[in-house]
Every structure is written in structure tokens, then in C-alpha cells.
Amino acid sequence: MSQLMLASHLGISVSGAKSRVQRARAILKKKLHEDLLLETDRYGNVLTCECRTPSGC
Image (cartoon, rainbow, N blue to C red):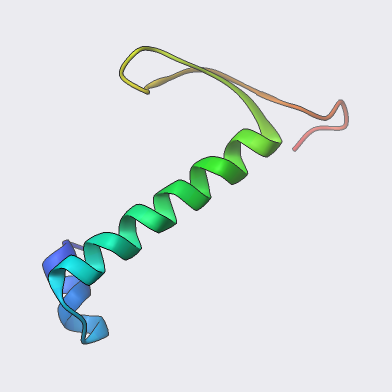
């Protein structure tokens, strides 16, 4: 879904939709880094992914 479509669906401005998307991305990134050991390249692409806990994810 494009940010324009999201804004229309939620009844908010496009800049408001962009802000919400960026905030959601930051929250998701934080949660992933809490649970997983991620190795990324300089562009942010994930190279390896391992669970932080021995029992698995």
C-alpha cells in the first residue's frame, strides 16, 4: 500500500502517514534487535540472523 493510499484510508495527511510509517519502522527495528542478533551490510541489508535466546525465537 502506498503512503498516499494509507493517508486516504486513515483520513490523515500524506506527511502524517509518512511520519507514522517511519515511527512504525523504528519500533519494528528496535523489537527485532532486542530478539535477534542481526549482521547487516553498510546499506542495512541483513546478512545473518540468529536468535538471542538458546531456546529459539
